[in-house]
Length: 241
Image 1: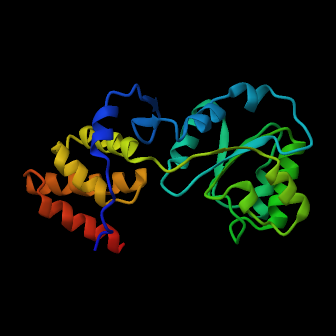
Image 2: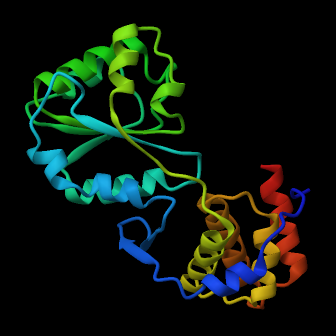
């Protein structure tokens, strides 16, 4: 069964529907919604002077963007890749060290201590990128100070990174995204149905995408409007997965 209802401030949503929200064009989805929860992170990754022209130091030439799952970190890195030529990695091995060349930039996604990022290899990788005057954008669900790499020097260097937190979207932002994404899919539903969905979803962009994608596919199959019964069924299905 889906989770208990959240207390949604419907009046606040109605008042803020006219907010001057901004959208960023990216490759794997038409728009990325920019608001207070991610504005600083967007500014950081779009700062080409920081990534390309800044003087290199003994610390890591890079930055970390962190936030909970579903907050949009991976979509933000797509914007980064449009501006900066870089290699996208989700783990590091000894072979990864061979990829480091002069001036080469990297994205390390889901960056947390563990089997995908062994501390010793991370340390060697960071040193090589620094020596070769490249840069690294780290994406993580943890802040630098929540990570323990069991190597004091590596802990110190990770914690010295320029960092930006992406917070979970509030209900107003999530509702606006829900409206926009369902409209893009041409899955038009009443405000009451959208609020019904919002009250029962986890607070993340990924949750919105999953439920709307499933409802859209089902709507195309049955060639009928979506009902509350349909919505309840797919909400239950998502909560069980």
